[in-house]
Length: 275
Image 1 (cartoon, rainbow, N blue to C red):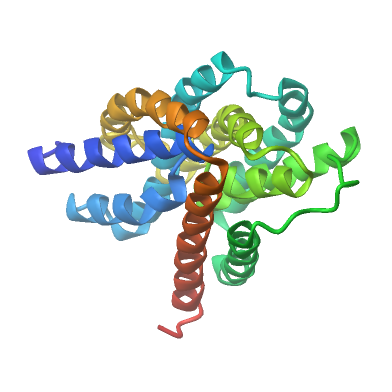
Image 2: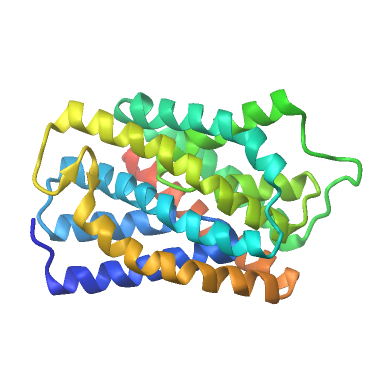
């Protein structure tokens, strides 16, 4: 498929939005971009059986590049909690490989989407209410972080997200300041994206073979356009994250979680055949 001018413009806008959100909130923008990418790929006459998978895989692959740009900006501010990153990474990679390479082809999204619509909505409500966690609550030990990382990597791979919608609320719940949670989540986006992207490529080659413009399930011409803007806007978002008031960051993150919750609820109801 040859990218039309309109397609290129739309992808540039989406890449800019995804990059800014990655820097601002430590999320890759994947879950927000997936519906639009699905629409664009369908518009480009990509097979309906492939379009959704390609949207999820391409969005996740974009996060590999966006997260590096965002992580670098946050690291300059000294906000990334590297011991937390290193302790979560093994589980994240394992979960990502399981999701992208195994479960992505077979799992039914209906109940999973419904559960996470409720979970993410509840997390957004707590963020909006600024509910304080117990003062004694801390991050779990190494075994606990490995388990949490596996869950984050697995779920992120199924929905095409960078994991920030899970890792940031989790860290805030464990009394990590939101700016550090956002910065650490930005760093976690890279291993999440790498693990899942490898899975998307290998499972895609096995399932659909070699197709024009496709590397497994990843639509690489679209990916190149997306990252052109996303890597430029990620540092801008990171700068805003360190200059805007904490309460504003929490409200924006809460609104993002509500949007994701609504999207996941829609996906669930659609999968169940209710709408």
